[in-house]
Amino acid sequence: MSKTSPWRSSFAVRLFLVAALAAAAFLGAYGFWSPSTGTTAGETSTDKTAPTSEMGVASFTSAESGTCLTWDIDPKGEISNFQSISCAEPHRFEVAAREDLSTYPTSEFGPTAKRPDVTRQNALRDELCASSTLGYLNSKWDPAGKYDIASVLPPSNAWDKGDRTLLCGLQTTDETGVPQLSTGNVEAVDQAVVAKAGECRSIDDKQIMRTVDCAQPHQLETVSVVNLGERFPNGYPAGEELDTYLNETCTAAAEKYLGGEENLYQSTLQPFWGSVSEASWNGGSRSVNCSLMHPNNGSFSIITGSATGGRAALTIDGAPPAQQPERNPIRNNASAAPSAAPSAAPGAAAPTPAVAPGQ
Image 1 (cartoon, helix red, strand yellow):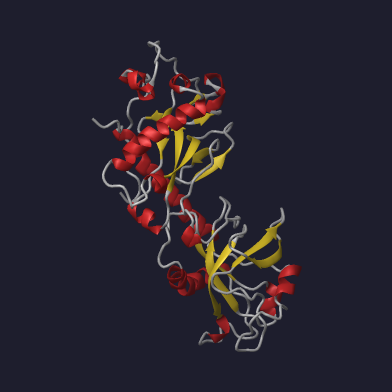
Image 2 (cartoon, rainbow, N blue to C red):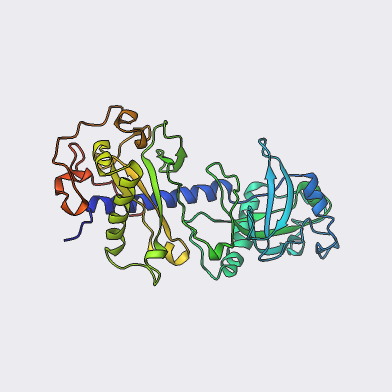
């Protein structure tokens, strides 16, 4: 008999959809990065190795396909130290292709043209970058993963001098849309959106998931990251094999995170895990989070505090954790009675999640 709990599987699907929505929100909010004027960016444009456009204007960067770029961002959002760097080093952008807008068959990007506004920038990204970037990745890209297809335009001073270079590529952003540092080529790394152990995650009314301090209201507390590629090296697991494995793995991770099965039981929280669709797997995502949650009428309870602080540190939907019934000591997992599982706690009946958008 499978140990898989059906409600956990349903919630796992829901979490994957939340992650996908979060990734889509990042893309919509910050799909096109155009560095502002900076001294270093201006100096980069004078690099003797930088190519020139058909108009004879030197480009602000010599970066070609396969090159990675990085820059510094101060607290005000100003850009400096814009430079090419090895993709093995921390960087903010991986170049998939470069375009010369001066070759566009219109006067839109002529010598006196204004720099495109955000709406036009997004359109250029879709028109010029989607196909070339997918080709660069050999179509190994997970749209629900952490990398967005994006573009870089010259800084304003370079644009005013006639530079019409447009770089297509990939970046990962934080919850406010600022490009973050990553390491390695996108095609070769895990593209999954995951939180770190100890981080708490809040899901807002728009189903967008954000990392918050565990003292703030949240629905999930991350206990571990599981690389499914290590367990399933030959391809996407079939049937319930994935969920069965995560049931066992995440329950063990939750017990370890809290210092034992008894602490997990007393917390009244339950192990919960994310999911990877076959499409995301084929696109390059391999990892999921194991987390702690509390069900409430087909959804998540609102939790404050970290479960690592014990029952006294937690509130669940504004109240202390429910008192657990006494039970016989558990000597090991093999001898554990079914009633010992966290899901047997009073008030923790298996929820039936609402149908997520698109289902």
